[in-house]
Length: 465
Picture 1: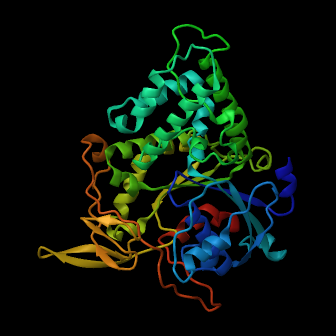
Picture 2 (picture 1 turned 45 degrees about the vertical axis):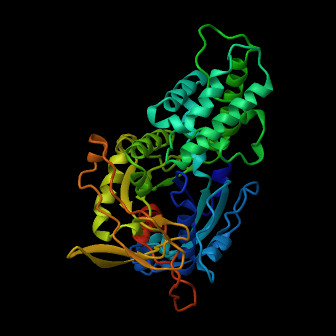
Picture 3 (picture 1 turned 30 degrees about the horizontal axis):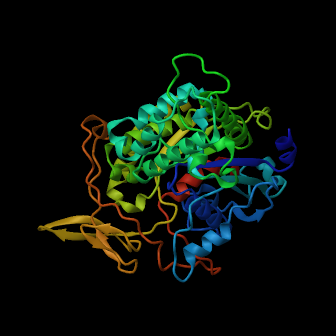
């Protein structure tokens, strides 16, 4: 009802910018806001290409309890004397941008320019992975978590936690020291798993980014093996089960209710290349994580008369980020791999009545293209400056030297990633932001991109028609 009252005179589009950790959410939002504020080079953004987009301005967000997205600080980091990528998201933040445009509709155009509030909420990618917990009991979550921890590939990361678990009797009398030791060991296991590319092993996400919840009972639990009989109410098992349910009720469910249940459009950013570079297990893990997370969204068409009261996501864009890390001739293959990763989620969304699309993009392009000769053969290359400390073939880069790099060939058949389990031979490096940027006639910096304008047109363009 509050949302309906707020948008009674100016329509509001709530865009969810979603992505797992390191997928590029902060970069995407910064580029989105800057391009709208400055009328960036976006020939694929229909309202701008048709001359109907008048301009944009930042406005006060209606929810005063949520921190503001630090757009100016992020832009300064990207465009300063020594450009660096801004820090990843560590807490929830929000931003409202008001768009002014001339409608195509003859009736609306008679009243003059129209306006649209575009609301954006940013949050840590780790928090996304908590959403599937809403449908699980403590016993079900424990069984899944312990099964993953005991897989052969998880041994190095999980062994200290499993050793700690073996020394605990879940049916013994509950005490805080045992709970804290288990929770600490489990959190360390999650951190090590993230460093090695695992994604679906990360929930609960607040264990990794606890914020003001650090040390609270709601974050002091861990998975336990199912007991052979009903545990006493004073047992350690009962204590951790109670804390798990409290975590869902007091942390996860409010996050879902206050943000996900109010979305109109969704872009899901996927760091496909990072998973490919980490190996087959990371690719399979990414598919599992995406399918689980997307099953929690409220998808489908909404009756326009009921939109203010019962919002649903009617469009989802799946975007393979960092498309500037491969040559444009590989973009079709990158998109095909993304389609394979989200195929299950896409089928579910379309069945619910949600329109979906996939593309490879870069919110801010860090490289340009070139070619190199090797063994009498000319190879398509990307040219950029690797971040200081990046390593490849025994060489450590200083963050100042520009190089030409053949990134490797993506598989022609995405299914091959799941059939034979062979790793993809990629030369994947992180590059610094562009060191020299053009400026428009007004003196604003122009952020280079790949298909960012097409993504924006799909997500917002029809609301500006």
